[in-house]
Structure formats: C-alpha cells, structure tokens
Image (cartoon, rainbow, N blue to C red):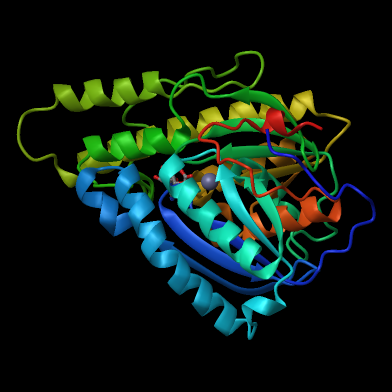
Amino acid sequence: MPSPVNRTLPWAVPGPILGIESSCDETAVAVLNADGHILAEAVLSQERHHAPYGGVVPEIAARAHLAHLPVLTRDVLTRASLEISALGAVAASAGPGLIGGLIVGSQFAKGLVIARGLSYVAVNHLEAHALTARLPGLVEGGAPFPYLLLLVSGGHCQCVAVEGVGRYRRLGATVDDAAGEAFDKVGKLLGLGWPGGPALERLASGGDPRRFAFPRPMLGRQGCDFSFSGLKTAVAQTVARLPAGAMPIQLAADIAAGFQAAVTDVLADRVSHAMAMMRGTASLLVVAGGVAANQAVRGALNRAATAHGFRLVAPPIRLCTDNAVMVAWAGLERLRLGLADGIDFAPRPRWPLEALAP
Ligand code: KG4
Ligand code: ZN
C-alpha cells in the first residue's frame, strides 16, 4: 500500500503543479499555479491511432503516451513560461484505467519528482472528474461539498455523492454497459466508425425520435442504477430486421434519434432519483465524462435539475472529457490537505472512489 505523507495542516503548496493524464487514449499535460489557475494545457487525442480497430488498443495507447508526454510537457511549460525547476509538484493519473498508459504517465511523473525533489500526487482519475467543478472560476459561487456527480463516459456511468476530497458515496452505477459504450456500439451498428457518440449526435439531429420506440431500461426503478445493454440489443435487432443493403440515411437518422432519446430519458430519470436521494443536503448536479458533450443529454439533465431544485453544472467540454487540468487540480486539492504520495505508489487498473476514504 502507498503511504500518504506530509499530513500536517495547513500545508502550503510549493509552487505550480504539473498534471499528467494517460489513463486511456488522451495524452494530456497541464500546469496550474498554486491557486489553481490554469497556466497552460494540452490534450492530444489518439483517436486516429485507434479508429481503424474500432476501439482503444491498450498497447498502442501506452506507446503513444510514451512518445507524446515529453513533447507535450515541454510545450506546456514553454507556454506557461516556466522552467521545470520552478515546479512545486507533479500529479499523475494512477488509475483506474489501462495499466500500460498509467505506468507510462506515473513513471514519467516520478522521474521529474526524483530529479527535481518535487511533491508527488497519485491521482484517482475518477476523483479528478469529480473535483473539476471546484476549479477556481468555473462555477459561480464555487462548488462547496456536498454535491451530486453524474459521471457518464465511455468507461463509467455512475451517480456519486461528492462529500469531500477523498470522500465519495456511490449512489448507483451501470449494471452492464456505460452510456458512452452504448453510443459507441450503436454508432458501429449504424456504420458511423469510432467513437460513435459525436457522429451519432450529428446524425440524430436530422431524425425523428418517435419513429422507433426503443426500451428505457431501469426507468422509474428505485435507486439510481443504470442499464444500457438491453437498449443496445433492441437497436441491434431493429437493424437486423431491415432489408439487406445500404441503410437509407433518414432511416439511420431516425434510429439514432430514437436511441439518443431513450438514453437521454434514462439518464434524466436515474439522476432524478439520485437528486431525490440527496435532497436537503445538496443543490448542485455536476456532470462529467464524454457523454456530457451531448446537447440532448445536457438539455434533459438541465430540465431534471430544475424540476428538483438543483443547479446543473456542466463544465466546458474540454474539461468534461479526459484532460490534465482536472488531474493537476485534484493534485492541488489533495496537497492542500497534506495528502502527497510516496513514489512507491503502484498504478491501479481498478480503483473505485470509495477506496479513497481516509
Ligand atoms: O470521457 P471520455 O472522453 O473518455 C472516457 O471514456 O474516459 O468519453 C468518451 C465517450 C465515448 O464513448 C464517446 O462516444 C462519448 O464519450 N461521447 C459522446 C459524445 N461525445 C463523446 N456521446 C454522446 N454524444 C456526444 N456528443
Ligand atoms: Zn475519464
């Protein structure tokens, strides 16, 4: 087990912090000053490396992180007008995620830490998403604890009560596919390539969401768990029943719109249940993850939040999807509590938020 060090409070953050993200297929680096203001950031999506395979290939991802991290770091530091020697700390995603990429990012961070005698933070990637809303200036009036987080990405779909740094209570999660995964699988069925989400949203904008009545799994069910595999199967069966040959564009658009409407209804319903579970303790609903880029999803969540007396906080899309600003910020939040890590911290492919509890 890694050993948190420096637990004396208050703990001054010793200068700017470099954040490193390499848990999946985005290579990202950012530098924030000790107050949390962004000095420079860079994200390099590896989408084109993985698209021919229809999904992320772990080995390719790890090699790409290895190739790009030094270049991005140099670029970010140059744009921030900082020498490495001016840094005070380095934070790197240490899990959950693809272990090859996590090892590359963590070792890169530890190299800088050892060479320059910096503080090191092994950041939980999910905690980084969870704390993004607290970046200075992002939410008017700030985002005090507790608040509700809906994390909807290609790998995660969960409602989390964010009660403090390191203090998370999972209220519900998907029992099968993540929402983004469902978008990607249906995108593939419609011949949209990978990742499916953005292309499917564009296609759906010209479609009739009422032509196909796809199921809304879990709708109205107690709690706030999610399920998307039945919906994906229903779309697959609809596609399989179509006459052979190229699918007419309007038909594809109607299927896309029907699918997106079903996902949107399910997300709004499950989050409504989660808001009811936090009624009286929280009034902020924060959404994170790639699916939060979807305008129909944002609209439905906004309406649900208003109906429950919550305010929806949807960070700018570049901060919803994987990025290093959130990693550096989570590092700062932890450092402020004296929660630095030892360089013996081993990256973890699985690392649930609940495991962060003190
Ligand atoms: O958070 P993210 O960039 O990476 C992780 O999965 O960690 O999320 C990517 C996921 C993909 O499944 C992608 O299809 C989905 O988010 N996505 C979208 C949209 N943009 C990205 N899904 C629906 N509508 C979108 N506009
Ligand atoms: Zn993520």
